[in-house]
Length: 235
Image (cartoon, rainbow, N blue to C red; front, side):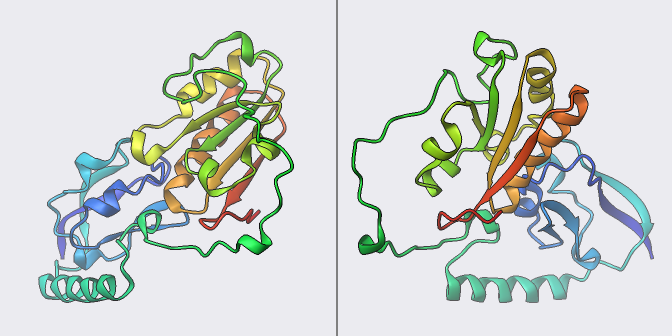
């Protein structure tokens, strides 16, 4: 049947996951860091997800689509509720409750007091200016907020000798690409390291940094490092 249904522009999607949380019917899920309409028969066409999209990636369209199946939605909600009670986690992978066992016997012995390697202020992407003396000749670290808590040695392994910018596209609900483009384009940046968490919403930070590198018109060495929720480097 021809009916009104949402359309998600993956080019505009920053992977924040807000639309998936707002979709009470469970029609939207995060896949490979992008929001996708995975169950067309679950989309009622009311668009609760639209106001939550910070990039305007979601619009309405009229096209051939399965009829909205209220009974299937209700059954899925009941199943999800039972699963949440069983595993005690929410719908968003980044908000899933987890507990990690810390083995004190395997922890390295600290031989001295840790030193902060933060070399400038401010460090939040939203607060930092696009041009500053500390950017000239800088190695840039673009890190998700949570990485400093998940990965114990972030200061020594990643922040040391770099200008550190931190942010969370899910909490800030913004697309950082424009500001990061200006920083990379208008300053003498030598390299870019992106450190993100494994959760899907962190894909927005990575894509913003990659888009900025491309839009800057510069050829700069860059790399992406992914941290697991229990504090391991995945790649």
